[in-house]
Image (cartoon, rainbow, N blue to C red; front, side):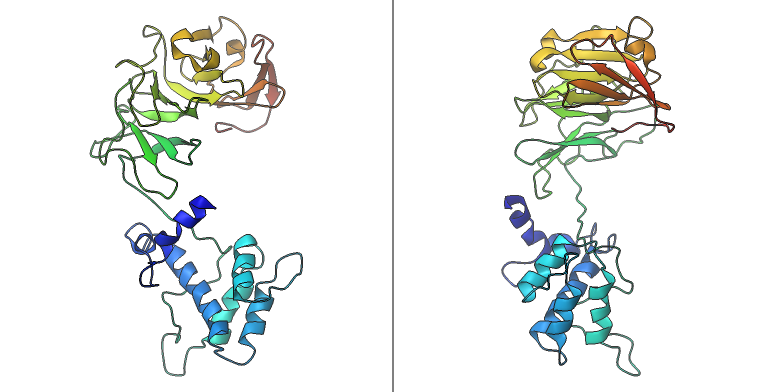
Amino acid sequence: MKIAAGNVPSFVDLATGGLGGVIQDSLNGGQTPTLANFATLANALAGCVTQVKPGACASLLAAARGPAGAEPTDTLTAAHSIAMYSWYKPERVFALLDAFYPVPKGRNLRPTPYAPYLQFSPSAWVLPLKFDGGGYRAGGKAMFDSEGNLWVGDNFTVGWQANDALWQGHATKFDPNGKPLSPITTGFTGGGMEGGTFGAAVDLKGNVWLSSYGSKSITVFDKDGRPLTPAEGINFGGRLGLMQGIITAPNGDMWALGVSKRQLLYFPKGDWKSGRIVCEGDSAEPCKSFTAPFHLAIDQQDRIWVSDSSFKVIRFPAADPTKAVKFDVRSNNSGL
């Protein structure tokens, strides 16, 4: 609720009641349908409030009915129902646009109180917003911390001529309402961070772990973006290859994957100084079963599942990684 309430100024100017700045900015006003979605919903609600035609409120309440069949009783419960069941028959509310505001003969536009309005019915009444800044560029995996802030490892850095041979991106942090908290061009730097990938995790202490392609290492930042790892990152004396997935286990252990060298890394209780390479290549299981390990997840039985960039998924107990089992999933897999 706190995050939702904090987003209201993005949509509405609380001083004037007009549109907020974010929904009108260059990222959202012309690049997403959010502004038109928002204004179309406002037109539907306004049709009831102003009694634009006889029976307008009855039409709105009927159009806002959810899948359980209960009809809202006023504009507030109607808006709540539309938001709660945004996917359910969205064309009903859209049809109110024509019912309430038909295009006058010889005219081009509908006489709506709010614009722009949609020309076609949406697939759902959702209001997504786009955000940028804080050094964000070609984000890899994202992760939320305990305060609702979003952390992203960036593939590249603003201003660079980015390509697959030169990964140099840093870390970006957004607050729960989309405000960038990291430096505008570079993001958070240091600690070996050069080219973020799909490796992003927040440990039980609130520190952020990000893997890199450019430096072939892992970087740990504190909650304020200060690097905790040395300038070269965690690289085990240069033994690591291109790094990908990282996870935090419920007990605080950290696990990570190296995609190019088929590596599995383990950091007990999130202590990066005590980490070790569990296996590499054909040295032992589960690495023997890896093709190009991309990401991993842990289930409620403390079993780790690895997406393998192949038609296989590998599973092993966290307590004994050598007991690996392969599953044929019949599709190339990466994210997990």
